[in-house]
Amino acid sequence: MSINILGIESSCDDTSAAVISDGVIKSNLIANQEVHKKYGGVVPELASRAHQQNIIPVVDAAIKQAGMQASDITAVAFTRGPGLLGSLLVGTSFAKGFALAQNIPLIEVNHLQGHVLAHFIKETPDDTNQPGFPFLCLLVSGGNSQLIVVKSPLEMDVVGATIDDAAGEAFDKCAKVMDLPYPGGPIVDKLAKEGDPTKIKLSKPRIDGYDYSFSGLKTSFLYHIRDNMKLNPNYIEENKTHLCAALQQTIIEILMEKVHKLLKDTGIKELAVAGGVSANSGLRDALTAYGQKHKVKVHIPKFSYTTDNAAMIAITGHFRFLKGEFASHDITPLARFEI
Ligand code: KG4
Image (cartoon, rainbow, N blue to C red; front, side, top):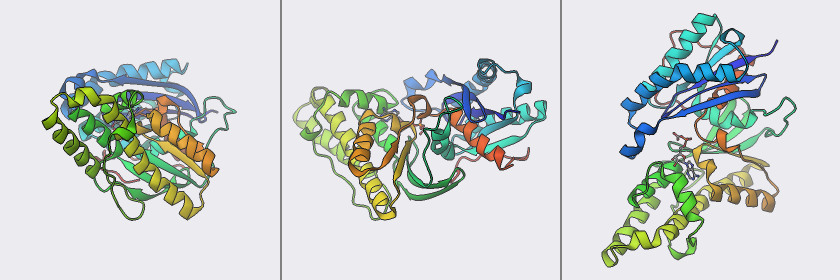
């Protein structure tokens, strides 16, 4: 009998449902919430309401696309946190209802662990393109920037983290200063391709150990723009591509310095990247080049598994199912949830 896991993700502004059968992807659907675009960021209240609207149709479609019926599902895995509480409540309550109705196990998933384990989603049953243990995972998203040593699917040690802003936050906040729409990361990525990163010098933090900091970079970006706008009111318009290129290059350098230090110190030879910022083309190129130079095996996820998705929740659910790690029905979501 196959193990068919239904995954539910509702931690932020995307409602997603996926089915994974014996570790192989069968469906992964995402309903993006357009409603936040005009506010320049996610509005929690509106996100919860949109999840409430989307969740049943999205789950329904995911099960159908997998060629299954609700009764074929072996267990339901849901994001318990971290995330927006109102949004998490929708997914949690739905998962409980589904588990009760089908009389199947309920499995809680840490969203961050899901990002890391997205590397284990198989495209076909004989897909072997997965990291070997131990590996280092650079987890970079809108809310997190962490360096994680992964010892086995469910054994992870966070050895470094941002002490202030996350890498994605740095992209988004600096993009906002340039009046670019939310989320700024993908737009900065696009504009950076046409710019020269050496034209503008931004400051890099000096933080000991494996921790990150991005708030200094944000301030340096802000001051650079303020000072230049005094001399030339069209400064942003005329230098947008260079500003984006310099910002992106600096974020990548900050990220890669600590990755290099950690790999050197531990002797780990496999490196994976996860989270929304791993969609960044400059970071992907930098990781590939690093792997070739230092003989490190680099794992870069498919685009569809980089931003929030339920496939990563389902695969984590699969590993927990194998260990018999089930949740009880009095479980509540957690806005903050460490790996
Ligand atoms: O993991 P994710 O989807 O969700 C949360 O963190 O909630 O990450 C979203 C973040 C945003 O900050 C977004 O700007 C960033 O990932 N992002 C990117 C790119 N695509 C998404 N940042 C840089 N370059 C990209 N291509």
